Amino acid sequence: MREFIVEADGGSRGNPGPAGYGSVVIDAAGGETLAERAEYIGVATNNVAEYRGLIAGLEAARDLDATARVRVRMDSKLVVEQMSGRWKIKHPDMKPLAARAAGVLPASQVTYEWIPRERNKHADRLANEAMDAGRRGEAWSPSASTAEPAARAARSAVPEPTGPPGDAAAGAAKARAALTGTRAAAPREGRGELRDQPVTGGSRATATGGTPSTGGEAGKAPAGPGDTGRAGTPGDAGRAGKAGDDERAARNVASGRTTTPAAGWSAPPDMGAPATFVLLRHGETSLTPQKRFSGSGGSDPSLSDAGREQAERVAAALAARGTIQAIVASPLARTRQTAGVVAARLGLDVVVEDGLRETDFGAWEGLTFGEVRERHPDDLDAWLASPEAEPTGGGESFAATAHRMAATRDKLIASYAGRTVLLVTHVTPIKTLVRLALGAPPESLFRMELSAASLSAVAYYADGNASVRLFNDTSHLR
Image 1: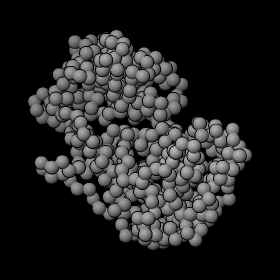
Image 2 (image 1 turned 120 degrees about the vertical axis):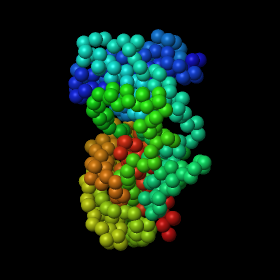
Image 3 (image 1 turned 180 degrees about the horizontal axis):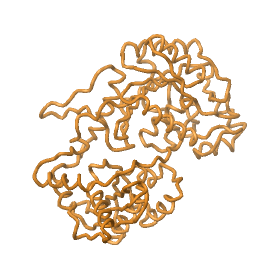
Image 4 (image 1 turned 45 degrees about the vertical axis):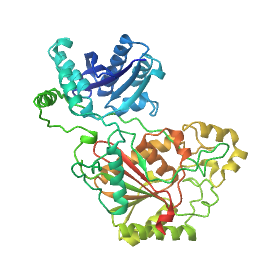
């Protein structure tokens, strides 16, 4: 079976404003360009233009061979996540475009991959050529395109890695450094050591060093109240015209000079310090050992003696590392008490953030999983099957929790850019932040177990990527 690569892009000079798209079909085996498509589409948004580029690329691939497998590569996280089914499509303008794209080829033949903008220059150039042609009142012509020579030269000059993603591992090393007080080493000449650089590859960041999950066993209920949720649908940032920059880049490639470093293994050593969230689940309460639902709508229990001891051990460990610069906590008693113990040890204040609160489990508060199964079997089955389902009695769905956590995450990233912040929160918020960083589906959170007073870390970089570090074990604090 043949395999094609479709690279697609779209842009709007104004968002909304004069817009156009570009797409290219590449033979996956030989790397040859098989088809180019571009069109000026009038006034539209970036996202509309991106979807139009995707549709044109898929249709071009279908026209070449309707039985071929197609790997779509785009720098629009919105389109990739929505077409992959991980993000819901809420905007009314996007729904018909997504449906049209999904209908071009059978879903079993198409996969989607996010790539950095630097690796999508061919389609990006075509989109800008189409916008330029539209401004002149002309139709875009393939003969006018200069994209393919530059794209071929760039692909031959910078081979894509075939081994493990070093950029993802290096991103994880940065998160690990936040917890260990060390800095990841730069590579030596001639060695295969990892560079201290951000992870690329969008939501497929790598989790390293974690304790294996014990959840998901057949016939067993999740280990404690499980979490799931669906990411929001943030639009990609607005784009201005990029033809001038691309023309200079093409000339530089042709002459052997490069001014824009490639992503991945050839990326610059650093993009600046990330916003690193060290995620601390609160210490035990009287409900924790019994694995009872304990959310934001229940009795708001305090730390038990064991929970206070756990908080003291965490405080000592974090003080020894010396990397925490600020502390933010959920408003519930158990998190504020845990944060207070750490803050006293580190000499920091605690900022309370309502968005970090636990999910409201409605009528299930204080019950075990088995008790909920006995009393509300239908509601529980619905809750396990869909992140949109609410617990009995009007609790908060995991989809709503995920939406809240995404907004809280963005707010805190903006407030603490470049700093290492301890977020003292709960099972569901932590699992949701990790899931969103990894781009994992909602059901993956039923396969995570998070110990009381455990630590995880997520580093958020300037390009929107994230890297995850999991500990999930309090034994390392003793």
